[in-house]
Length: 502
Image (cartoon, rainbow, N blue to C red; front, side, top):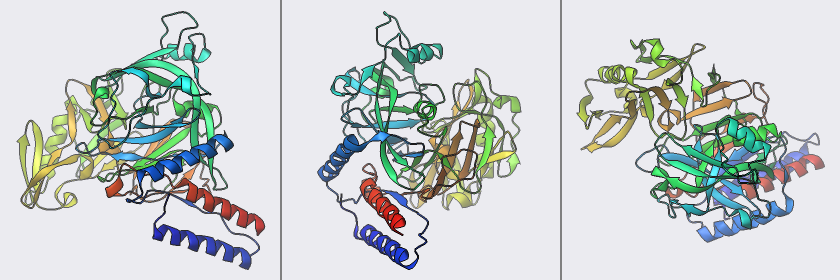
């Protein structure tokens, strides 16, 4: 892979500075490294694929069981429903490893990818990616999970698996998502390759054996090609989720974090580890729920608490507030929706905003900036903490009239339902920490194109020496962002060697 002149100059400066520091100070220096995601817009795709193939060979020759450390995943996609409308990452599975694009979904539990053969599975994608399928018989490390396997028995108890044949039959699954789409298949065990940041700052090519789904049937929106990916990466808490499997094996901490860039260029940060930045506030998770449910207590618009009975937000089998990165927009409980929309409309600047209704949606024509024209919204949660929403977290641009922009409320009424779902429209431009060890979720508004500090120990203020992850997004190449692992690894090895020599 070819780095830009600026990147090479920065690396040369870093290496020179390191060597100079070593010569000047035999006491050594603190190790610090940035991981950068991005790729020059002119890099040929074949060159990138060749680089990845070479990297895969190194992984096969030198991969080892993953040590406990921060696991870093690349993030692509965006929250804009008119361009992408989802965030996804890449995972490498099998031996030899094969790469798959999978949607990041905190609203489900299982990692699954399309297998061959598959009924109803899309073969092309409008997201400028080549779709792949997993073939268990072509992976030397793959094995099918049988109904007699203890992992299958446990999954049956939680509704994550089903068995209808003999004990030697494959352990099956069938999932239906909130949009009506569905997938079914069977479980396999195979190798997942990881980019792990060890405590000495090195990025290690490591691996772990996990159980994941092999989809041989899809229906509903999953069959559509416009935004098709290879599968879904569920980040739920159940025993067969990847985060649960890796933490149980001591490979990763029982905490993960994301920071999703809200601009159209998209991208972001996704780590198995705890992002530690000033201002993060936490609220407890509601216990014994299948999703990440939070205790929403009230909503304030422009500093004024809305007149909504708090019982509307209480959690039960039919209502509650869910954090779900697999949902593009946001959905508000039926009984709260009209009050919320009316408050936004009343608080909008009368001098620069004209309101109107289009196809049942409340819309606005605005001649000035969003923050000057529209109010902030505060979602108030248990523990006295608030999630501050800027106008970009509840409005979606729909077009323009001359020099004025048309904005519509992006929150939808969950008609006849008591469930509130906080999707990507709300989650973007914020750090979110899912501290499963302490059963809490934290957040803070943040520029997700900036670096973050990460620790492997949830609840403790211990930073990795190389705990800064940096994301670079390029609008001209927003679907081809790849990790510059070879450059980062070289710098990491060089710095460690220099430190030892010093």
